Image (cartoon, rainbow, N blue to C red):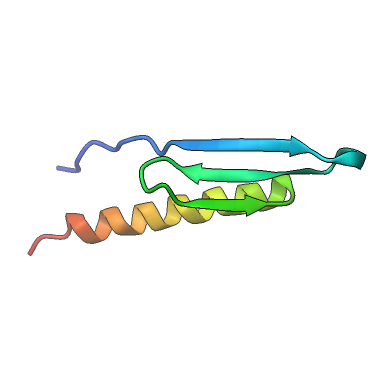
Length: 65
């Protein structure tokens, strides 16, 4: 049986620069990992990468020994 999945929690701090450019920092709450971004596309990529690493880590720890 699969273990229950816990939600991934992020804190996103956005700043609107002159000209409407968004930038900021995204933090993965569980690990404290932070990364800066300069666009919404970059933010999406960062969150996807953090989620992928979390999924990979969970798979490795769930393997039977």
